[in-house]
Structures are given as structure tokens and as C-alpha cells.
Length: 344
Image 1 (spheres, rainbow, N blue to C red):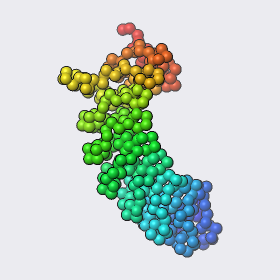
Image 2: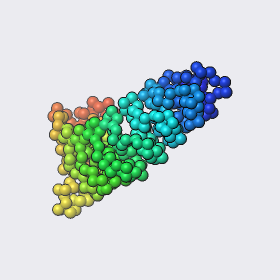
Image 3: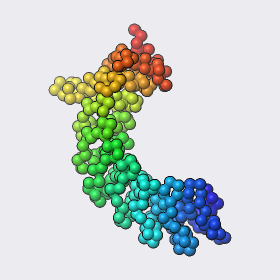
Image 4: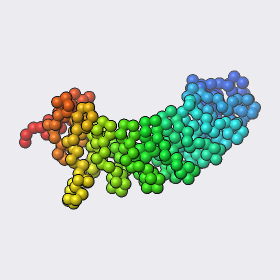
């Protein structure tokens, strides 16, 4: 960081004795004085740098960010308004062909900045290099208030797919945002069983992330398919076992026990019938194999308690113990498997 940048951050102004070379100073990240001023909300200084010293307000740093990106990311609305109204900055300027100011404002849940940018014509349809729109980003960050606002602006903005086929519903489920999942499924009509390019569903995402509340919502209220498989033939139990999602796996398996009391519902809720089912893709591994591979000791205990076959072999003839023995973090898993392999 240059000395003048430090001074701007601390004082919100230029030094009394300031040479032209100082004003045009650039740090190692390519930040100019205009970047620093916008980032820290010094709109008066932005105006001075632009009007008095003739500095560009559209300049980019090494990351492709303009001062408008910095102002939006940090919620400095006076700076946003000046940069667009007086500085003629493009409201949808892309950071290195990637993120727009609106996307950055959404990433920090700056509602007032979001509204201001949209009032200047910011687009909800633009995508970053991964195919994410501002709505994807909002679904990740968890503000149901902002989600509702964006839907008011464009009721179809939720109908978007990332480059790998992921929906905003996937994103909300993965990050545990129960209220947004409700909005998308109940109010918007999003497909609760939608699959991304890997065949992963929102329920698989919530299971992998061990989000109990979202999982319960998807299973109990939204009737998500608990037997669905991804492109590798992995079930919910495979995903949960691999990720170490003890809480969610325990809920799913215990819930099945409760439903078994109602014979007519048994087939619908009997997820335990998947406990020894290998994935249908390469490897032919059971959930227990996946848990052993990742050294998930608590999951191994849980699966064994609910009937996992400790002697089951994958397509290479390996048991869970064989796999755990070669796993990087497999020592605890080996200990548990040996304990359960020993006759009592």
C-alpha cells in the first residue's frame, strides 16, 4: 500500500501538500486513489480526484475491478451514485469479464446498494464466468428480503442455470437457507428434484452440508425424492457418508424407523434399503465404503448401527476395512471397523 493510499484511508482526503505523482500512485494490486476512495466511501475525494486532477473513474486494477465495483461491494451509495451519474460509469461493467457491481452488492447483502444499482438499470440477467447471476449469488448469501425484492423486479429471475447446471435452489439448499428454499419451491414453483450436470439434487446438497432444517423441509414438506441417484449412481446415503453428515444421516435413518410402524408407508420411506446398495457407477461402493475412504468414524458407527454390511466388497474386492487402511485419515475408521469385526 502506498503512503498516499494510507493517508486517504485514515483521513478521507489528500495531504495538504500533494504532488501529481502522488495522486496517480498505484499499488501492487493496481489500485488507484479512486479505487481506494470508492472502497472507503469518500465521495468528496472521488469528486476532487475526478474534477480537479482529471483521474479516470473507469480505471481497472489488476483484478479488473473499477471504483464502482469497490463502492458496490462495500455499500457506499453516495459513491455509487456519483460514479454513475457524474462519472458516466457503466452500471453493468464486468470485473475481468466476470462480476458486475450488482453481483458484488448481492454478495454482501447491501440492499440499498442493490436497489440503487437496479434503479440505474443494472441487469439481473448477466452471468459471470461460472454462469451465476445476481440471483444465484443472493440465494447463496441467504437474505430472503433481497430474494423477494429481486423477484418483484423480475419474477422469472430464479429460472437460471449455472454453467454446470446448478439452480438457485441448489445454492440455497447447499448453504442452509431454509426460508429461501421455501420461497423458491412453494412460491416460485422450482423443481425440488432438479439435477445439475453431475446429477446432484438440492436434497443431496443439503445432506452433504449436514443442514438438518433444509433436509427436513425438502423431505417432509416438499416431498423430495429420497431415492434419487446422481450420475455416478450415488444415493443420499453415499453423499452423507462421504461428507460426514452424521446429524442428517441419523435423521433420515431414524425417520425411516418411525415410518416402518405404518406398513403402507414403508416402501416410500425405507431409505435403509439403500444402506448396503452400492453406487451403480464405477467402484460399486456402499455408503460404508465411502465413509471408510474419508475416515468418517462417526458415520461408520451410525451406518453399522443401522445394518451396514461390514463385509461388503466393492468392485475391486475391498471391504470398508481395506479401504480405511489405505485412507489418509483412516486410523480412527480402522479402529472402529476392527472393533466391530471382532466377535464379542
